Image (cartoon, rainbow, N blue to C red; front, top):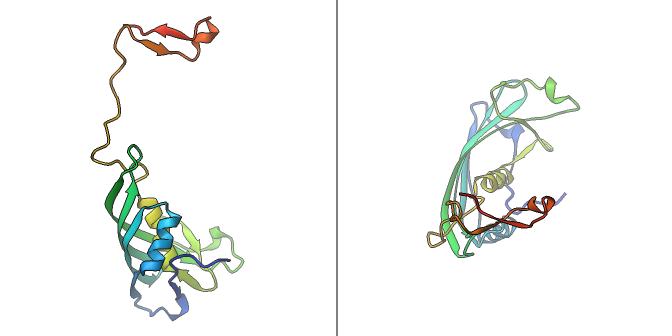
Length: 175
């Protein structure tokens, strides 16, 4: 298994009973690697803050926030689009130890249960995954033209793909 670009593994057996707060921040090389992974023009800042607490049963509850300064490519003009990303993170981790997921005791309203790998949680990878989900999937430059939302003018030709079944590939647009 390869190490993620931004890895901050935490052993859960060292977790104090009252929990622990951990702040992490990606360095320049990690940000550059994450920018390549997520097809960003730049990732100028990336940090997260987590609180880890013992949950019900053998679970560990992770709650936190992430903050990032990103530069994406406009989907229309390909111009750089800077943005600030802030997101809340909630996750529950549990050791499987050969047990089925249904056997792990958790809060039914909690997030999906993630497996502990070798008794560790990789907070860096958790933050990176949440960053990928929080990115704007269609970033638009303020200079990008607005998409056309008006119907075509009457009298203009409109391509009708199923018109060929009737014998013609284009028809006049109807009023």
